[in-house]
Image (cartoon, rainbow, N blue to C red; front, side):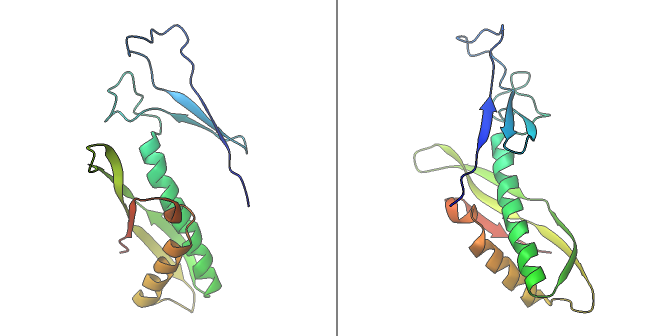
Length: 153
């Protein structure tokens, strides 16, 4: 089985720390060399201690679930002979409180909008079946407690 790595790095620099007034900006680096500027969510820690221009872990979580689903959907569509021209998902993650009062991402709604072309086009039931199969195959959807819902156009 594969292993996946990420390096997450934060540095205090000259910032105070013990007063809890330190910047939350940090960097994610991946094995291929991609670097992502990250920060806590400004919904959790207000700017300027958070940087709203950076990706926060909750957004990354939603994007990762969406990306995993999309990649499986594309593979399944190709295997079924359906040519996909574009796939766009404006996914939304919803934070709620659990039974212990802790916040969590309880629901992620995937909202894929897909354009097909060619002589073989799927009907709505084919698209629904491929989404169901993609959800069942997605490694991340199989790894989380979060409810992942697909709300296609």
